Image (cartoon, rainbow, N blue to C red; front, side, top):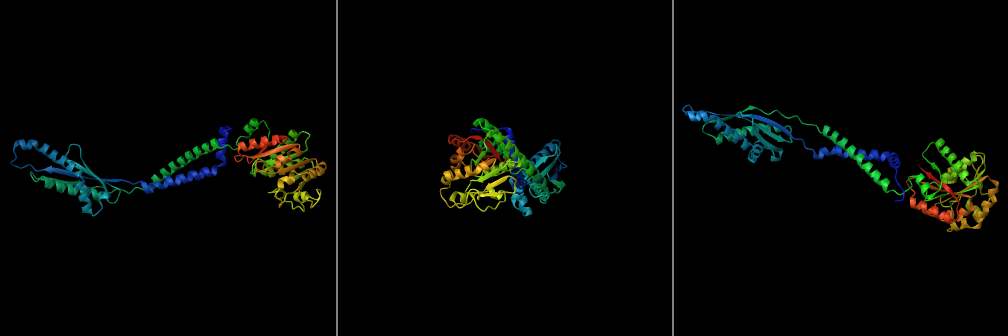
Length: 420
C-alpha cells in the first residue's frame, strides 16, 4: 500500500457512513433481542416439605429407643436417595399425565438435621411446577412407607409448594438487544478500520500532493451549501490562476470516469467570470457532455458541429446566464474516432481562433485513464488540472495518469479532490 491512513481518515469514514453504522447496530440489536424467544428457556422451581417420623413400640427395649434417632436419620437419607432417582420423575409424569420432558429435575435435601426433607421440582412450565413438586412429594411418601413397614413409618406433607410466577422475556430481550447494539458497533468499527486500511483510493489529498510533488488546488464538495461551494471555487480560482502564472487557458480532466471534472470546470469558469473576466468554457467531452445541462443552456450549435464544419467557431458559442461566461457545448457524435477528431488541427484552430477574444479559456475533457483526449490536447493549454474523487479514485490510477500527462508535455499545475 502506497498511502498511509491517519486516524482522521478513519473517523471521516465513519462520519460518511453513519447511516450504515446505525443500520448495522439496529440489525444486530434486533437479532440479539429476538434470540431469547428461540433459545432462552426459563426454569421454574417449587419446593414441598415432607416430615418423616417412626413409631416407637411400647415394648421396645432401651437399646432400640437409644437408636431411634439413628434409625429415623437413615430413613431420611433413604428418602433423599429415592428422590434423586429417575423412577420418581417417570412416575410423577405418569401420575400427572404429562410428558417426562416437562420435568427437568426432582431432588430432595434434608433440612438441617431434622427428620424433614424438602423436595424441589424444576420445570420450564411455571403453572405446572408446583403440582409436580407436590405430586412427587406424595409419591415419595408412599414409596417410603411401603419400603419400611416396621417399625411403622409416617411421611406427611407439611408445606405444599408455592406456585411459581411466570417470568417475562422482555427483560432478557432488552438486555440481549443492548448487547446486540454493542456487538454491532464493534463489528462495524472493526470492518470500517479494515476497509480504510485496505483501501488504496485517494483519502489523504495532502499526502498525494507530497508524494507526487504536485499542488492540491482545492477540495470541492457537491453536498456543501451553495455559498460554501462557491467559496471553494473562489479558493480554486486563486490557486489555479497563481500556479498558471501568465497562462490563460486551463485543461480540466477526470482521472477516472465521473470524478467531477465537468463540475470543477464549470465552477472554476463561473468563479473566474465573477471576477469580471470573460471566460470561454468548452465541453470537449463528446461522450457525456454534461455542462450545458449544468448551466441550463440550450445551444443552437455544439463543438461537434464546429468540428464537422456544420457551423463556424463563433456560431458554436452560446451565452449563459452568468455574466462574462460563454459556452461551447458538447453533443452526441456518431463518429467512432472522437479522440482523433479532437487531436486534429480542427480543434486547435477553433481554440486559437476564439482564445484571443476571452480573458480565459477552460476546457473539460473526459477521463484520462479511459480516453487519450487529455494527453492529446494537454500541449495546447498553459495549465492542466486533474480531478480525483475522494474514496473512489485509486491512487495508482492517479499516479499513472499523472505520469502519462507529464510525459505528453502537460503543465500540471495541480489537482482537485471532489466530494470531500
